[in-house]
Every structure is written in structure tokens, then in C-alpha cells.
Image 1: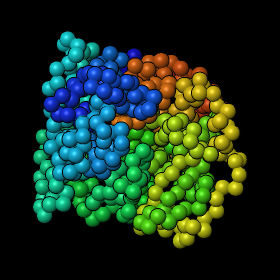
Image 2 (image 1 turned 135 degrees about the vertical axis):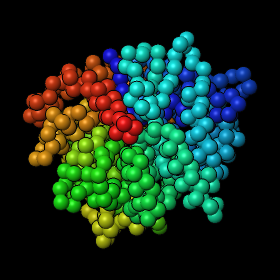
Image 3 (image 1 turned 120 degrees about the vertical axis):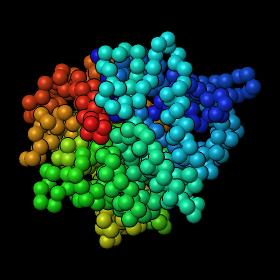
Image 4 (image 1 turned 180 degrees about the vertical axis):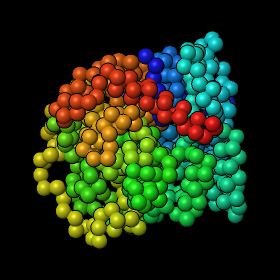
Length: 515
């Protein structure tokens, strides 16, 4: 069975290594903790396997992952700075991470250089398997479904910051535009995320990182900036899609208003996509319904802590209702635009969160930060006056998690993934302008493997895709039947979300771009 992945990073983790000795994208990374010169200890339990390979090119080839959204990404300045402040990293104890390279990243002036190097390195690295290849899909003719020796990749750039040299230079804008135009002229770039984790000059972002000083990643602005509008228009002119992942809710809302025909809500000037998503399980109007505490004023932002709302579809599943995830109205806009949603395999995004985090809190919850400049839009005129959720009804209660046997995590993570898929279909099925059979063709897998995520235990890496697909059938049938969604053939649907939908969408976009 062939597979598709809308969002994976075989080239990201080696960017933290010494450039002279960094692993090949075909090599398996097994990060170790260096205790002494010749003594290394596995750090999987400490880092919960986030540093080990999840989707290197060998893993993808061996598991018949035919086509991927190959993510080009330059780690942001604050990522390098924040990691270097971690004691275990600062001591040089993690053999994957080089302190000098972190300083290089933390300078923040090499982003464009980094994505160029990453693309060249992915294409030129010597495979670990004879006759194996990695090939960029620049035209539809480049993709050969019958070629079992090649992993094909369609370029997606995660973050417009990737086109900067020095973002603070006097000629930063001119250099940015030159880099953007030269790269997108020379390469078929299917989609770009306007923002990522760190504040940028194009739009406000949704907070979305753990384990590093959150103040480095506060979203402090509002919506799409004038320069952001200019660059997004350039993307539209070049038929490059906007990946809305990481945008703040207000930014997304402005984008929908811009892209949508004012006289016909079913017509958009181009499809909207989210390559590695989870769902909040909520309508936008309920975004501040499940508050654990009153929003706390932190100066430039409000700290907002949410309880985890219970699923409408599976009483033992819950959602992460942080605004980095999709509200029901986001799903509707993506579907009506003719876009597609890729499902992330990040535990936290799917609602389970990182068990190492949950074990250290009294009540399972998620925290994000809302810009003061967007507070009125998101939280209303007086955020500190918002009511908190009064009890543990309809949310993940502390005793429910405490009583959950860790041996059940594999099963639960699969159920949380199914819950997100079914919720997307439920939203479609309840909208008068969305055809459920068409919507079933607008969902795919976008794992975010090797994006420094804590992947679901039922599919920790590409090796688990085939078994996961088989194991999902029964759970999908049960939830779809319970929700009255009977128009979908589950066997066909699984084949579609794991391969056909994403493949067809990418090839169609490349055809539109290149003819």
C-alpha cells in the first residue's frame, strides 16, 4: 500500500548538528546523551523519541511513502537561542546537537542560506540503499507511481522568514524579495506557511511551542501586516498556496475574508490548506468556553489556559482547543475553498498532549498566549472578567487521566487521531453547502514527522503507517455509524486519506502551476 505525507521533515534535525559531520537524510538518527568521551546513553526516555528519526528517506522508501510534502525550514533565531540555554544542550551532552551550530542559528542571519543548503543536501546525499533516489516533483511528469526506488517530494516552505538573510539589515526587504522571487522562479513551491513559531513582519502567529522560554515566542502583533499582504499577493500571483498552520485566529479570519468572494461564500480565489492540523472540537464562538483560569495579563500577551473539552464522538477522547488548532469554521472555509486538511501525528495537537507534561499537572490542560493587540477580537473587551469552567463535566478530569494505564496509550492515541478525523467529517456533514463525499476527498495525512514532535505511540515513525491504517478501520466504522455518516466506504476512505487524496491534490496543484 503506497502512502502520502503532506508534512514531514527528513532534513530538519541534522541542521542542529556540526555541518561537517551531520547525518545524511538517508541515515537513522539515534540521539544519545554523552556521559563521557566514549560513553553514550540513550536519551529516548528523556526526550521521548522526539530527536530520533521518524521519517528519514530510508524509512520513507522502505515503507512505500511515495510522495511527501518535503518541508524546507530554517530553524528560527529564538529556537537556536532557547535550545542553547538548556543545560543538557549547553554542556554539549546531546550528540546530535552542536553548540556552535546553535550559535549560528541564533544569529538569525542565515535562513535563506539554510533552506538552499537543505534542498541541495536532500537531492545530493548518497542513499543508504542501492538505486534509491529522492526526487523533487517540479512537473507532473516527474512523478512516476510505478517507481519503487524513489521518494518523491513536493516543496513546501515553512515560514516566510526562510527567505531572509539579515532581517534587520537596511536592505532586508529588497533582499527578501530577491530571494523569494529567485527561489520560487527556480523551484516549484506548492505552498508556504506565512509564519511559524516566532514573531515575524508578515502576520501574527498562534503560540505553539513547549520546553523553551515561552516569552521568546509570544505573538505580540495583530492580523496580517501591509507587507504580509504584499507577499501573500505575490504567492497568489505565482499560484503558491497559503498553509494556514501557525497563523493566529484573527490572521486566519482576515485571510478567509480576503480570499472569499463577497457575493458567494463557496467561491475563493485559491484553495486554503492546513498541512499538519488538529481540531479544537469547537465553534469559534466557544473558543473561550473551557477556561481553567482567568486569562493572566503578562504585559504584551494574555496567558490563557484551557481545559480539554470532551469529544462529541468518543466519550473517552478530548481536544486541544488552543487556537493553533482548527475551529469548525476553519474546517468549513478550507472545504469550501477546495483545499485540504492534513492530520498531524503530534500527540499534543491531537488532544492527548505529551504524557510527560500531563503527569506533572493537576488537571490536563493546554496553555497559549494571546496578543494584547488581538485580545479584544479573541477574548472580548475585558479578558480578566471571563468566567472559568465551573467543574469537571465535559472535560478531561484529573482522575480520568490518573486512572489511565500507560499500556493503553497506543490504543488511546489511535482513538484520538480517529476522533479528529471524524470531527472534521461531522462538521462537513452538518454544513448545507458541503458534500460529505467530496469532503472525504479533502482530508489526508500530514504527520509532521521529524518536526521535533512527540509522535503518537500507535505510529511513532513511518514504520508504523501500514499497521495504523489497518488498526483504524473498526474505530472509524464505529464512530461514523454513531454519527450517522453512512455515505462513506471506510476501506476506500482509508486508502484515500493515507495516499490518494494528498497525491491527487499535489499533482493537480503542480499541473495548475506548470501546465
